[in-house]
Image 1 (cartoon, rainbow, N blue to C red):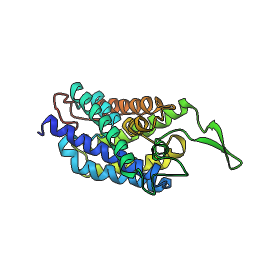
Image 2 (image 1 turned 120 degrees about the horizontal axis):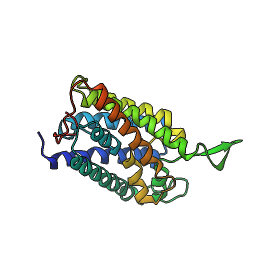
Image 3 (image 1 turned 180 degrees about the horizontal axis):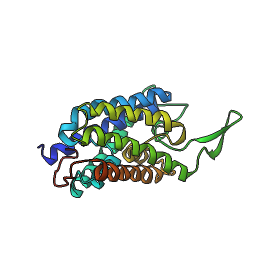
Length: 249
């Protein structure tokens, strides 16, 4: 079994990759939703497959909370995972700003790079009326919580079924990546489809974009916890084993 230090390094690498790649695609390159969804899904698929044997490849506080509720990780280990995920997200967003400052990508629509990172921070978009963007959000904050929660529930259920359940496929990282791609395709126009509090926290720390930030904690954590309860406590045939340090068995 890998040491806790190795597990935390693996969580840092995976979370860093997600925030850096997706943040760049969303806020700097200005890609469309298909490109953004593929950037997130393929990054998760690759890094989860590479690091699942080290840490369980959570890369997401919602997954970690789901594993905790499902009895698959110790509370102290879960807390350390989440701290490392948030640190990785902050470093990734900061490095993105530093790496692109002064380049032709440093200005998006005549805005500084920190505002480009803000564009890459998931948020509820405003309504477009007669081809003019209004100041009214497309959906309410409560609806945003529901969207984020439902999509994260499906993501964490997929994680449990393919990576935490011993009966699942060894290609679990690919399945989780597919579900993350679908989540962005479905939810991007509604909430920005974070499905991961760290994905919002890092860019928000750098850009100061805190509007409705709580939505991206409450929704995903509730969805992840519910998935952990349903799969970890009900669908799994084997009893939960919270004594293990690994995020997934």
